[in-house]
Image 1 (cartoon, rainbow, N blue to C red):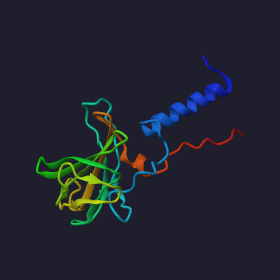
Image 2: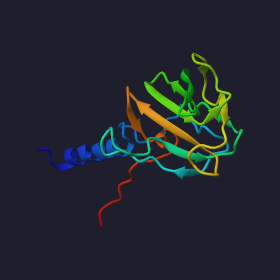
Image 3: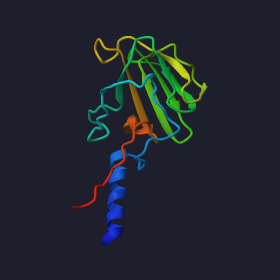
Image 4: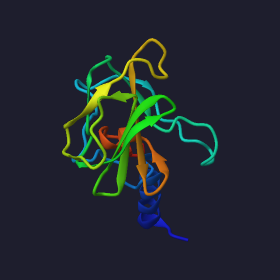
Length: 164
């Protein structure tokens, strides 16, 4: 068992990893918002208790129908098609992350090389936010580990306050 400052350091490291889901609690400089200007979050990420259970595997960002959808980071379009009647695009990033975007019309084709901020399509009307157009933005790490995409753009570092 670790005691003293080593124990505190191990605890802080574990808290950082738990909050970020990947061990990287600060925003990642190579990524940006997929809509401009910075959108409101309509529905946050909700990790499922088990991989097969219900959850919200991404965030919903308020937008306008026809608004450009932007590549959150550099990478290559690894999927561009329609799933369940909605246009979906996915970008595989060099760091192993994959971002997904839906519903998107006028999507860039499979294999397109993107840089951060490139227009990859336009936000389609409809979707699952009712009468409010929204972009469902997802993040996968590895093969199928869903994470909160806001970790790419928001500072979510734990700040410890002094005792007493």
